[in-house]
Length: 242
Ligand SMILES: NC(=O)c1ccc[n+]([C@@H]2O[C@H](COP(=O)([O-])OP(=O)(O)OC[C@H]3O[C@@H](n4cnc5c(N)ncnc54)[C@H](O)[C@@H]3O)[C@@H](O)[C@H]2O)c1
Image 1 (tube, rainbow, N blue to C red):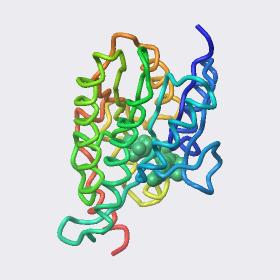
Image 2 (image 1 turned 90 degrees about the vertical axis):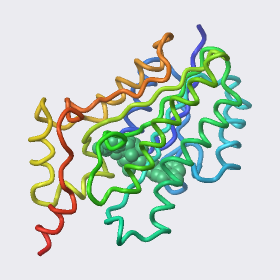
Image 3 (image 1 turned 180 degrees about the vertical axis):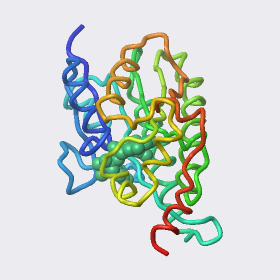
Image 4 (image 1 turned 135 degrees about the vertical axis):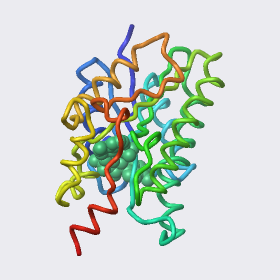
């Protein structure tokens, strides 16, 4: 098989950056796509349909093929439902859910037989967390979207899967680790007693990219945290700052 071509959206940081390295180690040519101003090959904002369409058309035109798409773009916020700014809620849903939809729509348009899309959902797709209404709702939506797209794209030989990581310390989560109690509470509610690494998530992405019989799967990758409960983030923040 000639060299596979992969696109990693959100590939400039954290889990996405680890996926770039792991897919390269696995023999892929990798195009790194992320927001302007980040270290990437192609600028893209996943909330902008024209940019997402142009990303995939451009990759196919330049590289001659597309095999693997990883969507690691994500953002979060912390607010109680009754206090939530509606524009903030929409922004988080737009990046995590509508962005995931636009990636599936336009990757699904250009991928051929054997193509694979992996989206990053979250433990919060199934575990609610105080203050995380927008993120939890968006990631739960992305998990369901993964299954619908797998149904629709399966007959064309395109596989659609997602990974739901638990806590991985990256630029997204590092600020919360500075708030007393959050990390300890999280680890006390994780059977394996530790957070994960970006590389461990990337290993699962590589596996899924090659797993020819796997589609419609939303993989819990979290040291067993989905078996217990999510920390009360708002409670920890309130105690830390009162
Ligand atoms: N770190 C964790 O504990 C954790 C747990 C569960 C799920 N996730 C999910 O994994 C994914 C990667 O998270 P991470 O921890 O590596 O975060 P990160 O902040 O290190 O990386 C996210 C990347 O997404 C990019 N991005 C943000 N908005 C974008 C947009 N509109 N268009 C294009 N790119 C955009 C950012 O520039 C950044 O490079 C996210 O979807 C996140 O929700 C992370």
